[in-house]
Image (cartoon, rainbow, N blue to C red; front, side):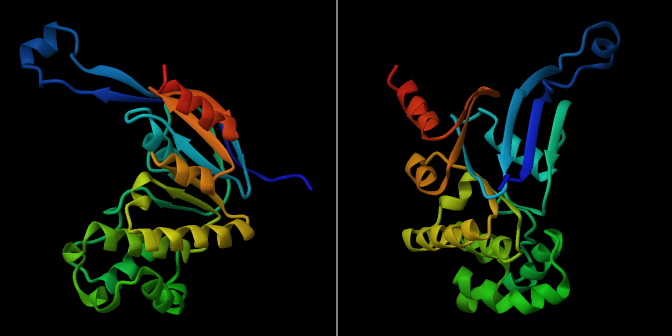
Length: 241
């Protein structure tokens, strides 16, 4: 049976403008702008099929989170084509979608609506979300009182109960305690059976190797390699040089 293509990136270029000190009126009129163009991603090409679990690896500043934001539709590329098919749910920032003054329960509704759940669906799944997140009595407390771990658990729980077809996870998803990380990887096995596509970023190579079947190596905005376990081996060897 032919696998279904769900993500296709061709010649992706993402450029940011770095603004230095604000120029005076005279400098603006008579001198060249001090703004500097920075290629966050350059000539990125890869394909992902339904059910793939892709780990994005690379040093800090290599463009990993920028690529996730492109896939999530949070930002757009300058040139190149990006095809994404399916319901995308992203957990890129623990703070994203949460209102600090609202309770955990109220934020379930808010975040659920943001990522495409209906009010009826949120109502049906609210108890399951709270149970999986292990928030307990704090569900009625405002989010600003939550620890990073509690926000992670609640954000991840909402994301997986939203029935994503493509799930995007930044490296923050692994900051929970060991017990909750085990729950996450058990849930990954369930998502695997449902052929949910997962794209995740992490510096914990062992965690990625346990969960992923493909790996994308970025360095300074450029794609070094894309493929199976051999990519991780090459990445590890690069630290020995």
